[in-house]
Image (cartoon, rainbow, N blue to C red; front, side, top):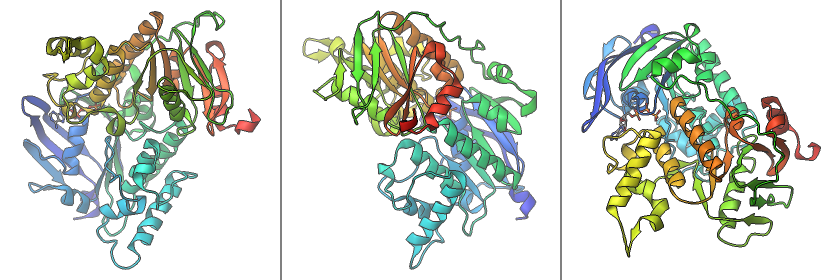
Amino acid sequence: MTGEAAGVVRLEAVAKSFGSVKALAGVDFTVDAGELIGLVGHNGAGKSTLMHILAGTLAPSAGRIVIGGTVRPDYSVATAQALGLRCVFQELSLCPNLTVAENTRVIHAGLTGIGWRRRAGALIGRKLDEIFPGHGIDPADVVQDLSIGRRQMVEVARAFTVTDEPLHLVILDEPTSSLDAHTAGQLLAHVRRAVAGGVSCILISHVLGEILDNADRVLIMRDGAVVAGGPAADYDRGRLVAAMGADHRRAAPPAASGKARGAAPERVRAATPQGGAGLLARAGEVIGLAGLAGHGQTEMLLRIFDGARRRIPGVEVRGRVALVAGDRQRDGVFPLWSIADNIAVGSIAALRRGLLISRRREEALAEQWRRAIGIRTPDMANNILTLSGGNQQKALFARALACDAPIILMDDPMRGVDVGTKLEVYDLIRAEARKGRTFVWYTTEIEELDHCDHVYVFRGGAVVADLGREELTEEKVIQSSFLEASQA
Ligand SMILES: Nc1ncnc2c1ncn2[C@@H]1O[C@H](COP(=O)(O)OP(=O)(O)OP(=O)(O)O)[C@@H](O)[C@H]1O
């Protein structure tokens, strides 16, 4: 294989069906060497399926994969690896019970013999240092002990490690979805450097700014097909969104109420574990938690969640709570259950008829939410894992909103949700808040803070800034995220 040909991947009329669902309806698409392609599309458009076909983890139902000018009928995970194709999966693929170094060995069969663990550790350690300076990850860390953001960093760094096999194409499926803005910036800068060095990348993202700022070329998928594409310079946000078939309207953040806080009853008052100033949330408020990932926001949500069930010093919670988990793989979905059961599990009391759960009521509830937030499936009785990642996340939202808890805790809940749906969910949150529900919302997307009435910025487990709607700016949030807690 020549160097030039090796960098070129072409898919010809690639199709894939899952039972009656046509995930890919005949996709043609070429990646040239040293090119950064931005791939966008609504939830369920077929992006991840396409990527799994390129990774060799799914076989196409029809069509051809051509690599370096050669048709590859025998395409498999091993072929992909040998030909220099790597994937960073949206549902992270690291083995949770192995260390970071051992997970690196998994994709480098050549790392054998005495001292392989040390060499694998050095390899991934160097790559982490290069991409994410100050990452705080030890190659000896066991993956399941790492936060979802750090797992995502390991997965990304591992994809860029090289031993004796070439590296030609890296496909990144929503690689920044669990990263804060600073870490996402480090990753994207690395991707640009890699592309400048001749590696090709396909970047799948729902954060359209990331695509427009970084890609050379964009491809837009809709309902299993590539429907548009061209130089990224020819596109802006509006054109991308229109081509995706999503609602074109820009989310209009609610106008600042101008009201001083204090009118509505208190629902949550929670100090940080060290006893420092914490947060206050009132009925009808949307409270944002911001700051760099892993600085105590998720812990705060869990403290409130626990505080609703038992006495925790410094935490007062008035009312039941529902939690939208951020790590859907680990804490969110019940993988053996149907979509309908996954939604209804939060509302069992309301669905009871005598001692039994009413199937009819459960189906009606699931159907109501399928329509409310557009969960794309032919049948809500299907297993939850048949949904695309973004659609699974929508089901978790539906679970929390369908139950009657007055307090909803959300741990970076929009991971992988497409732009059109996000706008609908923002509206839904506002509507529920107007009815008196309280939302405590940790987000890694700074833009989402526009939808909050009040924002607490976290650093090192402490609240370092307390910003009302009127004073909220991206600059202030970023500045305080980096300030030492003692300086704030
Ligand atoms: N194992 C499966 N069984 C049945 N249907 C599936 C399976 N995997 C994917 N699908 C369906 O294929 C379609 C495409 O899904 P895919 O995950 O490729 O979408 P996507 O564009 O990556 O979406 P997202 O932005 O939410 O990640 C969806 O309708 C999904 O429900």
